[in-house]
View 1 (cartoon, rainbow, N blue to C red):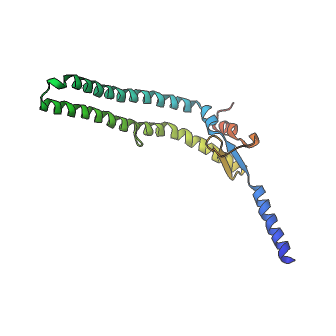
View 2: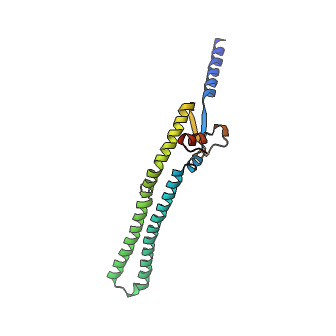
View 3: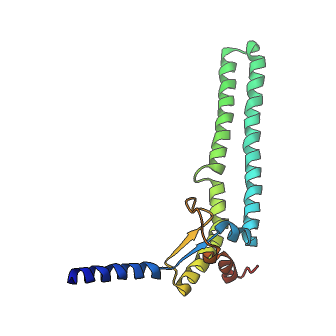
Length: 171
């Protein structure tokens, strides 16, 4: 009898602790779209990306033009001239690939630029979420925008507007 009562008491304690946990949800896409600095940073990244892509495309076009010219003049060239031209074309293609890697590689200029522009904004959002979490006692805050396995979330637990308000961006 004592074991049964102890088991029920233990089960009741676990259920009570589970019910005491507080959860909340934020929509990072919604938050970011309502921060003007984020939109400005995004626009800057788009402009820089287009500029750099044009540079890479121009180098690729030069290499393509060099190759077409090489093909049309091939019959008039000596073996040394063919080798020289082929090397020039290969060097131009390599330069285009190197430039693309420099700008768009995994540790390229675009990544560094994105990091420098977005990190302060993301840190500000994180600080606001952390402050709200500490103030209201949330143990878990989920991101609705990135959590693909959330099928339904009650709007009552969405604190996105509260995060924006905490950061000084009220709707």
